[in-house]
Length: 510
Image 1 (cartoon, rainbow, N blue to C red):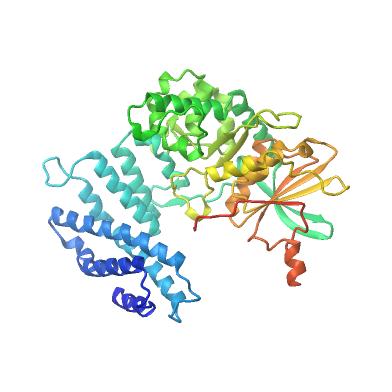
Image 2 (image 1 turned 90 degrees about the vertical axis):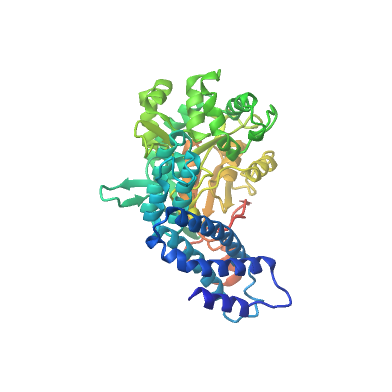
């Protein structure tokens, strides 16, 4: 569909008496794009770099604003009440139009690269940070267009343009599994090795049968070794917060955050201050092991492998590699990078007794900065909503049996990384009681979340002969017996009744 026809169709679908200002803005910007479309198409024939730069700058402003408006329209458009009978296809066309914009910039990327290389005496801006920012624009546009080779090249050029970013922004390249000599690349979306290694099992419970993921024996053993590395280094929220607060109190820039000794920081708060922490690394009074682990797995900083080995020891570093938590920096192979963010949650008010119950709960997630992987597969970092729910459930033993059978089944619906169910299990007296059989079923439509749940379970010593965590890839209530009873149709995979349901439903559209 041409831009002109798309404009006409959108107009036909709008009620002139009740115009949405956002749609008006989007229509205006679509017209701008239509006017620019010709010059952009012919950009390769433009010999004046300054003219090319002006075209690209104008176009970039249009696409950023347009994308925001179109995504808002696509997610909020009430298709059932829209006056256009073909509203569904219209929304799809709008999204396709947005995608086409990104393909346009990727198509002219060779010319874009030329523009980014110029002498200081040129008329064009020569600031290194501005050049790096243009590379980032290029990388984002190429990823949205699905041209991952261009995306990786742009990220690489940006990190080489500003060497400091090699330490602080390399997480953008996570997922890069292989880069061949011919330039072709492979992106690994789901890790199924190390702590993330699982196997499928069939469970039969009270006449119900379902297929689920459970950790392998190798993952369980690696989980114990990895957990000990963090526990022995005293990787606690208090110690990590002290590191952050030292950086903030030493930093002159008030906008970076104010020193607050009583504040509980979200995972993203730690990551956002990675540059300040790196700047004061040598001033920190903590032991080298906690400093290195915090920078790698909470602040997202890449460090020299020799520095990490000096702090942790060669054997522990190899365990972190084998567990799938550590990888080499794609730009500088002498440096290592945390594949995941690991947030330590305090269990100082835990009421139960038993081995390893006094140490924190370690929750692995993705970084908040978008990597090469698809956004829909991302595991969200620990935010204040998750911490509030953890606090609300802290005084409740959700695994306490509701019948005389001494069996307990809890469902964590839309589990994500599994924080709600895993933290509840760590605090549960019933889970620690060998006389009670506890079962945690973690369910999510994201297959990557299913791997993270099992990995977090073994990292926290929650898999035993008596108690097990199962993860199921499913869409909401489909596998529940409730669906079977109400609809009268038995799904292929249903889990039966549970004693308790925990849930932190998704609130971000992917």
